[in-house]
Length: 223
Ligand code: FE
Image 1 (cartoon, rainbow, N blue to C red):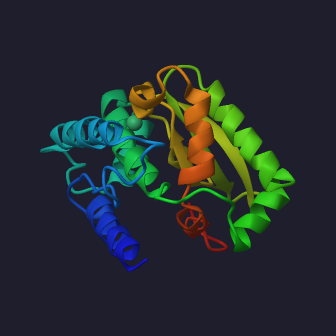
Image 2 (image 1 turned 45 degrees about the vertical axis):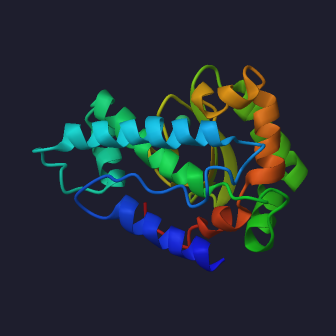
Image 3 (image 1 turned 180 degrees about the vertical axis):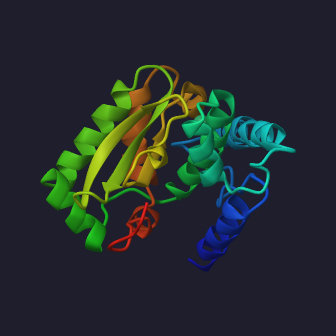
């Protein structure tokens, strides 16, 4: 628990510190999610794919007015300005940093407390939510993400698919709570074409519901 709090603190400092987009550590060992996500997958995914998004983002913002912005500001500005290359790399830097925190060794099971209540209120039951999330993840065509988001306009949760690097933070009132990467680089070494098996294992054995619940916004939070 103490280790995870330290990791969370390091992530917050690293990912949201002003001035530079950084590559946060995974928060667990490369072997920690085996056999559901292998050491090889985590090494390629974090050290190669995620690292590349971060380095390209920093190259693109160097000597511009975005150099001192945090990653969320860069995402929103590049999205508004339709700067697609910068948006893709900045959003993927954010998406992956968020995604690593959505998993933990011996994760999965069901959420508790306020999050559990909100899931039941929004989807009818945890089983309905889980089914909807898994179906959406399997249905993403090509590369993309599936999210559990909170919508401040109706104070409800919903499942959202995004394509490519897109993420919920570009849309008014949406706060991401949970993300699952369904790009092939996230699962192909371990599952080949069997994306549904990867999704199933993520839900059963990996989700860190404590982290997901910690993302619920406090009331009256501003976009
Ligand atoms: Fe990825």
